[in-house]
Structure formats: structure tokens, C-alpha cells
Image (cartoon, rainbow, N blue to C red; front, side, top):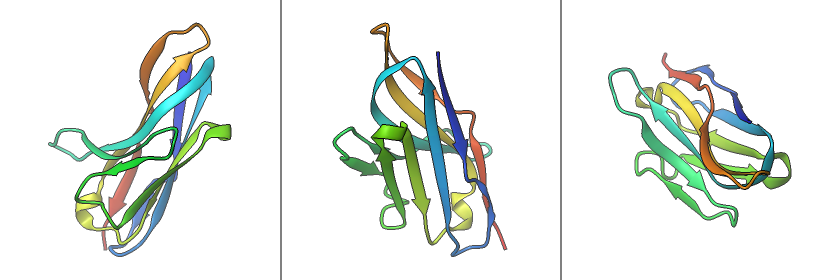
Length: 120
């Protein structure tokens, strides 16, 4: 019914930047909150940032001031601009969206994840 496809991950040196994108497609009526989460090996998945339909944002303390989340409602796409990357930012990054389907059903959907590696 709904697919979220992420892109933009890769390997970068400490201090570098990456921009992640995630586009939702399917039988979508509207999308409420969209967000990014990450999971490092041996750790639980954690919130990175979220953004509402009115562009209210929320960030994890560890990324505040370095990461910026944004969205394009017309494209059902959410972005994560990551600057001043640190080795501890290395993880699989997942996109999440709270979607209202054309049928009226509301659900949370996840992307497949994109790897971000920060290493010299």
C-alpha cells in the first residue's frame, strides 16, 4: 500500500556532510509526521528528527545544530541534511511516515534503511 524509499547514504570523513532523502508512494491521502531514526550495531533504534505538516521540528540532542530536517509535501518527500558528521553518527538511517491512506486507514510505515558511515 505504501512504500518509503530512502537514498543518499554513503561513507564520508568526519566533518563532512550528507543529505538523505525519503519519498513515500502508494495509496496515500495525506502524510502527517515524517521522521528519521537510526540504529547503530548493538544499539536500539533512536529518534534523529521529526517534522510535522506545519513544519514543526524536533531533534535529538546529539544532532541539534548539525542536522536539519525538511519536507516537500507536494512530493511526499522528507530530507535530512547532515553536517559536521562524527563517527558516532554512523548507523543505518530509517525514514518513518504516519500516513492516512485513501481508504481512511492510518498507519506508520518505514523505509528499508540507508547506511551512513563516518570514518577517516
